[in-house]
Length: 221
Image (cartoon, rainbow, N blue to C red; front, side, top):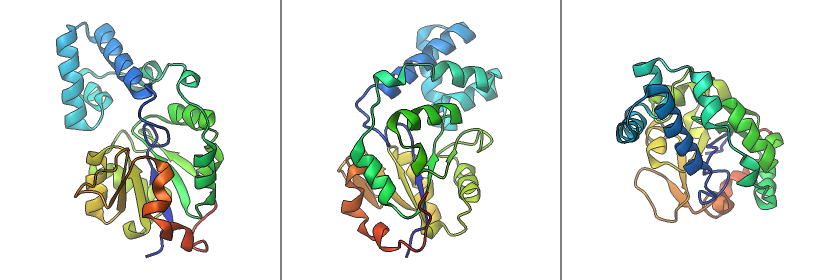
């Protein structure tokens, strides 16, 4: 099977999960909820976990139960100095530039945050577009609708021609069931619900060398 579309997660996938970005975002989620909901910290922490488990993102739970304004929430939780956490990686730039398939960022974050991350990492030009929470009409991984909409946005009609990379196994399970080839990023440990596991994006050629063998079947961007 030749691959024509790569769906690549943003946070903790395009950059190492050890640099503190996601921990800081989680802290800002908590601060937002403390300020807007006026609830005790233990209740906020429990709600944040419950909403994430139930709806895929804390935002979706807050929209449903508290009618939180999504724009306000997303602007607040992503308002951090990303330049202090992220830096370009020439090896990742070379790797993405060498892949012939069309590449899309597929994220539960919003477009503005994704653009900032890609800009700092100097990866913007390697992606055809960003499939974010707004493009998905606030469906989000691991909800099945998110994957169906992502395929539609990308123009990919055959899930078997699609490869998805994500640092969360629960986000990969629905994709695997749909026939998408999946790679868990951030660990060497194999998982039954992903086709491959790699410690970082640098190791993609180790498990999928065939991606570079179908250069006439995809786009350079």
